[in-house]
Image (tube, rainbow, N blue to C red; front, side):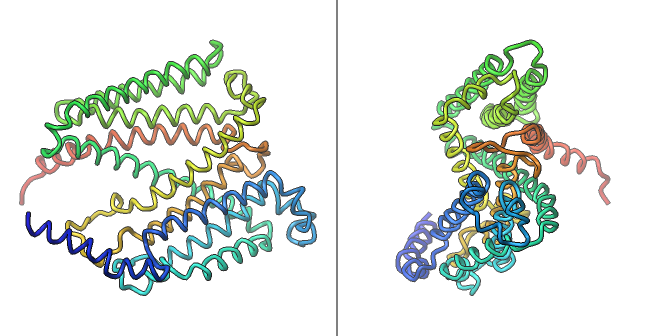
Length: 398
């Protein structure tokens, strides 16, 4: 106990008086760098949105570029892909240049946490150069972005499931099991109440007619998945409790709701979406919330590299980097592709209305498949230890 306290004191002393504080004074701090990269990511995505919605009226100079063919190939959906290409290239280059950084005294740590003027100049140059790239290359990047966006969704999904599992392990640990038993039950109960309430509201809002069979299927299957996850979690051999399936159910209900909201507003089964278009302020607020949520999700996933490591270090040393720099930039690189898909509705030929994001049947099915995949991964994480243990028990000993 005393050694732990002393190591904690040494760690805080190092932060205040040592290298991290010196790096902060010199403009090279890994903790502040996360927010700087997130701000750059946000500004770039807002630029992509501006090119899509207001590019035709504001960027008349684009018509002079030979690659733009009168401006049509550098604005709209293709303009989004061009900005996304510049953003992706920047973060992928940062991934290649910082992957494997493990110590704070590594020269690559200074590159990750400092040199902001140079990096901003590089990113601006890459975005400008993306508008000089031939249209054929942009079409190829658009196809690649579909795959990159899928990788981002899988990484985000695993990160969310790992967080829920970690939360459950903390609640069931000997340290907090007795003190937090009532709080855990309240959290689980609240999660299930919100899940059931969300499913009921989706039935009311998005199935106004019996002919809305697709929405009925989406909502009903979400309820089935919630029941299935709960049954597996409460099985005697698993015994994972109510917390993890409850919080995972919240995520599935959110994905189902988001998928239905992504259906084209002309559909008769989503009356709420049709009325929302008449209220510009609500559309704008929804767009801003969606953009901020996307940036926050990318940020939180990028610093969660521990759940993707097969071998985790039991003891962190003082000069270890606080998070995986390479993984952080890789997530932002795939996030740039994902955001481009949201702005163009996963279809380069799909025309999006102003102040809309992630609307179209492709967006709907991407979210639904992500929901089903999330349930499968969660159930597998519950039963995999049991299956692997039984296989090891049945295997003959040499």
